[in-house]
Image (tube, rainbow, N blue to C red):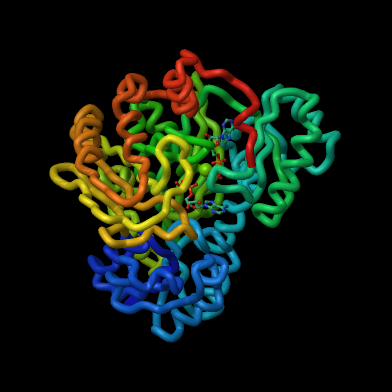
Length: 464
Ligand code: ADP
Ligand code: ADP
Ligand code: MG
C-alpha cells in the first residue's frame, strides 16, 4: 500500500510536532500551517514547508477552513492531519477536504457527526446493547420531560450539552427546585459556547473513575483495542494526569471493557483511531460516556505500553491500509503515566503565557517528552495553555511513578509559571500512589491541603 507523499498538519504546538515525527519515520513530507505570531514556532521549523494562514485569533487561522484548504492545494498536499482540538471534530471540515480531493486523516464524516452529538451517540449505544449512564433517551426538549426523567433517575443529575467537549457544557443539579433554572441556563450556555442549545440528562454518578479505551478500526470493519487508560485525575472535568493500564483492575475487567469498546466501535461503524470513554462506578459497572473521534492528548501512554505508534496507524488507515494487527498480537508491557504540563499558575490554574528564558527538558531512561517548547520561545496567550507532556514508563507502576518524580525534578523552566509543582504534589500523594482513586481525587486533595480534612459535596462544581 502506497502512503501519502505529503501531509499538511492543520494544528500547532506539541501535536503538530508529534505528527511531523510520525510522517518523517514513514518517509512522508510535511507542511506546517501557522498564524502570523507563530512563524518561529517549533512545528514550523521542523516541517519541510510552511504556510501562514492568518492572524493570531484561531477563528482566522487554525480554524479557517478556506485558508487551510488553499494551503493544502498550493503545496500539493494529499492529506490533512487535524491533530486534536481545532478542526479535528468538525464534520464540515472533513467533508470540505473530500470535496477538494484531499484525504482527511480521521474517521468518516458520519462518525464525526455521531461522535459530536453526544446525545445521539448515547442512543446508538443503547440500541446496540452498550450500557449507558441512566438518563434521557435523546435531547430533553420540554420541562415536563426534564422533570419526569430527573425524578425517575433520581438526583443529583447532570445536564450536558449535546455538542459539549473539553470538560465544558456540564451542570450538576442537586434538587428539583434548582432544575428548571439550571435547564434554562444550560441551554443558553450551550448555545453561546457550541452554537447548539440542545442538552440531555444523565444521572450524576459519584464516586466514579474515568476509564477509556483506545480503538483502531479499518475500512473492512476490523476493530482492535489497545487497552484502557485511567484519566481520573481531573480538574473541572478536564484531564491532568493519565495512565495505562488502569491500576487495580483484573484481567477479566480489562477484557470486559475492551470488548465493550470494540462493540461500541462496531455499533458506530467506526473507522480509523478513536477513543471510547466510560464511567466506572464503585461496583465496577461500566457505562458508555462518549466517543472521541480523533487522537487523544493522552495517546502516548498507550503507545508506551503497546509499542504501537497510533499516529502512524491513523495515517496508514486513512491511506486505505487494512489492519495488519490482530487483537491477540497486541501485548501490554509495563506501566506508563503522563503529566500534562500547562503554562499556568499551579495553585490557581490561571494561564501564564510569556517568554521562556531557560528550559531543561527531562530525559534519561523511560522518559518521553512531547513538546514544542524551547528556550526563547514565547508561549502565546491565544491558544491552549498546555506546553508539554511528560510521559514516564516503568516495568511497574511504582517504577513509572519514581521516574516521573525524577523527571519533574529535572523539568527546569524560567520565565513562566507551569503546573510542574502541582504534578509533584500529586505524585507524592498517598492516594495517588495507592492507585484506583476516583474523579474527586483532586477535590479531596485540595480540601486536605486547606485543612478541611474531607471533601465537601456542594453545588460549586456546576459550571459551563
Ligand atoms: P467532554 O466531552 O467534555 O469530555 P464527557 O462527557 O467526556 O465530556 O465528561 C467529562 C468528565 O465529566 C468525565 O471524565 C467525568 O469526570 C465527568 N462526567 C461526565 N458524565 C458524568 C456523569 N454522568 N456522572 C459523573 N461524572 C460525569
Ligand atoms: P482528550 O481526551 O484528548 O484529552 P480533551 O477533552 O482534553 O481531550 O480535549 C483535547 C483538546 O480538544 C483540548 O485542547 C480541548 O480544549 C479541545 N476540545 C475538545 N472538545 C472541544 C469542543 N467541543 N470545543 C472546543 N474545544 C474542544
Ligand atoms: Mg470526554
